[in-house]
Image 1 (spheres, rainbow, N blue to C red):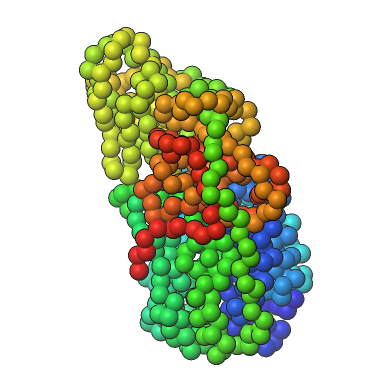
Image 2 (cartoon, rainbow, N blue to C red):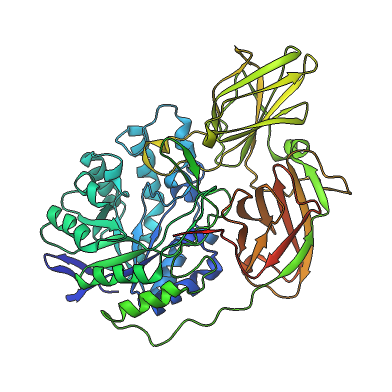
Length: 583
């Protein structure tokens, strides 16, 4: 692979002028069996490069427990990119934002009550350095200096929107270098944050979605010479629960792209293909009100969530053809998808009944946070005995993020962080009644100072003004449901419950799980965590990658937190429903 050089007048690749035409493609949001297909389509749109973040929290879910296999086999992804003739911009963080759980920072960092993330806090830097020592050596042969596809590596991510500690960025750059990164480094920031987030001697790039001439001028004001690169050209946007599905007009986006490329600048589309926040890995924002991101990361990108070209793909390809050679080959027509109009979920078990096989209860004076329990995601089930009968005012000082409250197993109310709710009233019929609180982590904040986002019940729990002591805290990460003792029968459990069904098929293909009539929860197919659903919308379906289906018997499990479809059935259909559109 040729080497990238940064000159006063632009990029050069083996001495020849080079324009980066790149697109975001996050390997961890795409089933690994689909990597080759998505990379090929990037080349067919006219791209010569792809960009990917690296999520620290997936690669190191616990301190020292490093993973780089299966869907996290980054070296294999880089090799596939090289085989397709694509270069790579690598963005290893440690912070990545990305609308990803905690911005990619592992939750175990927050077990230390006063750690300062994205800073020179020695505890944070020690963990980052150790992570880089594990992550980067297996990638050394993938750097362009050794014949690999990785042209450049990013330092941090939009740091100027968070802080201005140049010494922190310098430490990260030095750590990358010590771990074998010998290709050019770069930073990226929005125009107003460029000076705060730049690092002397490192390429600065800028992020925007419109007004290219104006925003590139801001970059040129900071760096009078050198290449111009829009490291994130926003072609769409993400969705939040309770909002609409955000789209961006293809023609307007193509015009903005034309304006950008006419300046001679390089570009990285954010995103080329968004993919999916599988499992519980969606992030959230908190700008005075907490807003969790949905499961789909379709992003209104040139390739949709299932990897099919959109009208934006064709529009961008036409613009790129004005500035660079593009392949004559076009992507193949969409493959047939799997459909099954009705799958009955005939087996059920209440979550409160099944909880003992999903996690061990820990006794303590007060409720423990997820981080104190060593838990990354999912739910925590808190229980305590109430001392007196009579009217009760329950106050939960800080709910992170959604609490369902039960008295002797019966639901008495819900408190949501998003709605700034803290209290509810009910009547306790007898002394010794069991108070149960199921708390859902709906996604750690991924942007701004809110990234210090611990989960569970934080602060005091008060009953009629007095603190409640003597709790058990049971972590329910839901990493595996294999041990749940499902039962059959016509009776649907009261409150949160798992529902299971099976179906047969003689072929596998992509599909979308429709949960019409269900309220809120999560779903799995053959043990693969598809993600969250919520009747609040906008998203009404969950993408099911074809490779997780199998010929013969298949299993679907739905965790419904409130009221399931009356007939306890779901459907697999060929098309998604991402909700009403917001332009």
